[in-house]
Length: 419
Image (tube, rainbow, N blue to C red; front, side, top):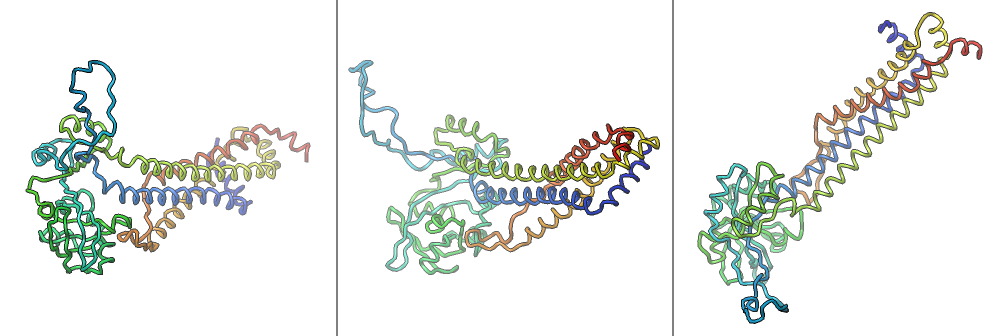
């Protein structure tokens, strides 16, 4: 088998039917290009949503949960023996919001090999005071620089900075919704009142906007010491501990161990965001299904074109076999045509896919719900380009192989008699 001669004949066949060859190549181009565009955009969107939700969620969240007492006073009376006892309207047991021995517990977690970082939080209810206006609010005391490093707090600050809050113990990152309702600007002073009656006047060092109106209307951030002052508590007062892991998959197992060891409630990220992760997986599955379908349709287009080409080239097939070409040579002539179409379509598809992805990535995306996002998200992952080329080449090879088998089995004498 002379490879150069076979490729030369295949090229001649393709150029003799330029229109059909171009259409077949465009089928592969659009299939691969669309696959790359959809996968890049859909996974970029998933990454954006993951960033908005998962990056702000600790891998393990430790806190004291209010719950009903497992043992009631009636259970302590031995008079009733093993008889059934019924207690109605069970009230939650009295417990503190603070985590007992929170500082030593955090020091212990920091030293563990699975721990990437540990942060403390204080969650408190308060009221924003503005003249005669009183708004319900939720104040979160944090180590602001750690929160920025581990949970990207800085990405949600639309005005001001984390550094400004870090340097001012009497500062606050005010929720954008609260600021709008009270007509406040950065540098103004806002008064807070705790549920215990403590009053604090804090300077606004910036505005926080999560993109969720219900949160932005109540949520604000202060330093840990400021939150402790607002609650009238000491420096050991901590209500929540957040742990970020190197391996997120270990969160469920470690959360169970922490509950038993520290006697606190431990919620892992999979449990806290189960519905969100399911939605992300479904979106990815749909994008794969649609993109692969496009590539299969392109393969069928090549199959139809090569099938018609064989009928049109029956005289050529008869001449080739009559002049000494074997059936295997004829088969590879048509397979090589399909591979050439697939290769050309794949190269152009890669260029089109990348070009459109760059165009989407630079398209303005301005929405108040996502103040830090300026353009549409696109993920440039090399595996999408590799998968697209491989699938495109495999589909075109199969699309050319089936018609080539028919050409291989044709008898030149029957073809000439039919003419």
